[in-house]
Length: 391
Ligand code: GLA
Image (cartoon, rainbow, N blue to C red):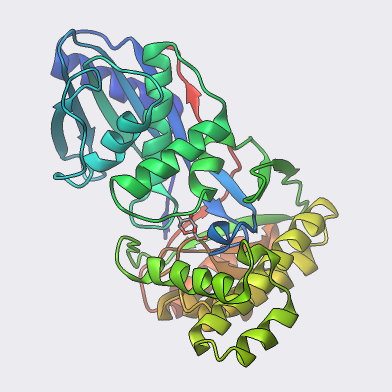
């Protein structure tokens, strides 16, 4: 049975420091870490200004480096399989303006550098990570927020976490070109150990919700269907929601009510636009309910809403895939499972489920024998958000 095991901050930091010494021939002077995330509920609603409820994970991106007294930034990244990739681009004090380009992976860091609210001299850096790639656990936001935090450590200029999240989101829009919402960067900047974070994506206020769930755990099953959101599907979902907002004359779909669905019918809105709107209205209310049910330890209600949310993401938002649907169906038949749903952007990636501790091993075995793919598991351990690391 494949388990995803986090390496831990100390191991990753040592690895990054040793790599830096080996490649650049001196010790790094600044380092930072930022986590990946799993979303408990509230998907495809951050860009509609709704509520989301993610948790920061112990899978991290760690960056270590130092100034190099040149106008160039040289960055090396160690990939999941141990391969090393390198890129160089001008520092932001240089006359050249940074632009997106090749290699594609460098856009995440160049975008953050271009959006960092202060000039940065040339530097060398090493990036290491243990975030499972293409699993929908937001490896991109983890790189962006780690990079921003690394630049804070390097320059000594610090920014509040919400500003950091907004600038990293802007970087993702402008450089990799993915029109994401704010959830991933926000939770990576603001996560807290043992807590989920209820984020109001309109006011950008957030509330830490203790993950004190008694006899249960959140089991995450990676379908290992690699998800990719830079294609056209994600932007299309956003466009459908924007179209509904415009037709209804609202400032965002957060304000839509069930009555607006009838209005869209009358206005002869596209069927898909109506389906997406229905998902958004329901998912926002379910997210608020789950955050209250978690606080009240009403696990049965959390589970019921997980199932409803999955059904809506699968049938109305149409962002699930047969493999994630199958995992949820298997979970429905298992003893000790309160509920399950796909999580994140979709089109592959992970399923989150609320499972009684006593039954976890049996549940995993069931998935192994009934799921046609090759799953990986981990228990979600809510962790801290981005931080500067001591070297
Ligand atoms: C991706 C995006 C987020 C959010 C989720 C779906 O992870 O980056 O902003 O829209 O999909 O909830």
